[in-house]
Length: 591
Image (tube, rainbow, N blue to C red; front, side, top):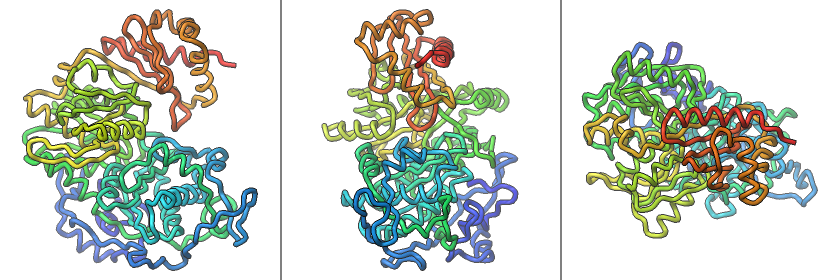
């Protein structure tokens, strides 16, 4: 968290007023918090950066309910009771909600590892029901016992605080305890859960606009997988109707989030300082594009601890939907301007929940995430690399890795593939996505220091590993990229694109045999890209043309958007292909 005018360290330390607008029941007084903050030393690296949290205590006291099995006042332990099929109640005054039906009627459906939807659709009742269903599923598979602690956190979008409270109330309803990790990166909350062997829940819409949000579920070993999603959908939850008003909001406002626990932040920080060790960035000038990324202050702290001279730029108190796969033109131009004006060695950033990285070298050109992933896998000397089918084919062409595995798009698919590689005897197993999020499925040792497994998207590791590789080879990050095979990718999206229209477009090109599908594709795209060589329907429609160029069409899985990925032998051609592909898709007639 970055302190700004109007946000005091008192608010940071009490853990309620600044991030959430909530004062925990057992929060310290303002005087106590000011005393606790007295030893925090401010520093100045840019005009809009004011406070370093590196001097915070390792962990502040946390009010966690059910530490001894006791429920908070006003919350009753409710045994799960599923009413007979066809009934709206269970005979005990409870209302029955079938999750599969809610997903169809509410507009809040599964995206990547959790539920996403419009904020107006993510009512307290919906968020409560989905959280209860997740915990019931864990009960079914033996991953949850009464009194289990569940850690929750969130990003910086305006709706997150309310949804976190709805999640917390559902946890209490299920006779479990709540640990409030506050505003924290998605990979940090997952790491905490793995270390503590407890479920965790992250409220975040990731990179999508702030009129939407989401709830990301993790079990005690990391992200939920597709089989878990099916298990959650199959749940029926029973909720006392008096908890909610007719509009789905809570009828009572008597419960507040527990006091903040900083242990997840400390654990996440030490993961990188312990692994990278020495101050390898000493003498390097790094710009941190902060915008509204939840991990902005923690990334600053990590870079500083590793020796970098860090300048924070672009801080925003308004949420900015930074998508590392479809980088906004203004962010492209800003990075070039910053590089030219200030001569930084690198510019780094993340998306909203800080599980997807951005990094540019001295030229100010943002690296594609699927190129960054190759560099990180090289640094870690991986013997198995998994990447989605949409990722740059330079992965195979580099010849750096004994095994390359391709999957559908989405971290659950990447994780499943990595687990298979590990079961088959691979010992340095990693994966990444086109958005740059990097995952590890085994412990990996480099230079005598061990990096523990973290099978979820992470932004800190790829940023730091790329910088470490550049320093080790005495090169700029941009020079590392130039040494890879010359394959360039581009991607963009059409926003507010109807899901039904997206489905029909894909069906238009995949419903026949190869020859008829190829003719249909060439009728729309042939004048731009030539003859079709092969078609891959692993995820969406990936078309390889005889020229060696690639066009990949794919409806988004978590938003009303249509994504187009392209690959060619030059950056300019890949971008031109992308624009042409988007233009064709916009005007394809569908019945």
